[in-house]
Image (cartoon, rainbow, N blue to C red):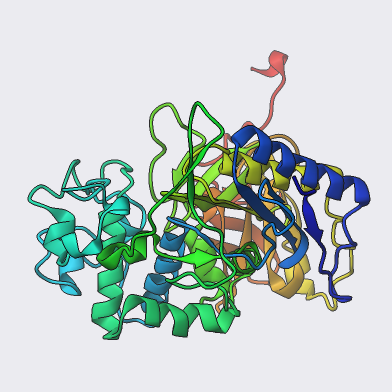
Length: 472
């Protein structure tokens, strides 16, 4: 059995140092353990930091010619994230809205009331699978039309009430892309996503070198070849082949965006929870084409995939600027999602990111500086800090409480960007002499002193002021 392959690629401009030998060994050991315990013919993995490949490894029981970061595997439902990117592009172009019913763009499906956001987030109530034979192991010619994919009873749950994973739902999204673009789904994907991002080893068909898919006997160390069916109309739900290097590059795009494909704000939107967590699995939910979870105290997003003969997982952690990809060529065995999360944790724990150095603001507006400092919401002490570009950061000085960054607007107000105050308006209300009287945040009044009698506190302020026990 070969030792884990390992490659490192760090351009000189990369902000992180090369991974330490102990970290690289820990990653290789986790991969080797997963391959052995999961009884996988081969396992390939990669880790990125700052959008750059910092480690790639592989483990194989097939001899010296094991896989590397350019070996293709089927990635199954990771394909759904690519399809979601295409839909988001159409949204950003103004061609459609996520609130649009499917019927507006793809009429005649029988489920036209389901919105595009519900299809993206698996909340449309559609069935998980197609009617008829197991679609992953049967010819696509058995499902030549959307009616063959959806069947007579396409809905299993009330629309919009729960998360229910649906492969047919993403078939509809792929057909939507084809209808709007008037071109095959895989051609649109190649032109609009794969080529701009440089994902030249990702596509709907395998290209050498690629790993053959196997089933491993559950009670014997024996292999049986799995069929590699063309998925036809189901392609948008799971057709793609890719490599750890290409998926690592795609993970970097999902962290930062790319103006040639999707801007940073749109890829962040994909990571916002749209689907409720299922009962008993409160740490996991779903955004727009991305699964969201908590592992080892960190928020991760990404996707997994499986088809007969293949397993795949991609997880990213925004706070650590890390991504991990794991691919295997077996139908079951290694827990690739867990392995990918463990690879993220290994690097994050062993080599935590250095914080950005503190730097003074390039210039300070005295009128804005007058807004900074302590304020009181009733009796709670709130700190407001002035940030670059006239932004404000608001939050409690100690303990838990509502926090948000606020974006400056042209009219002199600010708009909340996160948490409870997302989208809410913050205004510094000034006196006739220009000094700040109070802050108004979505009707809440923040004053320089607790219940300042000089400020317009709703409900008024007790004229007796603050009193001790003997004064009551």
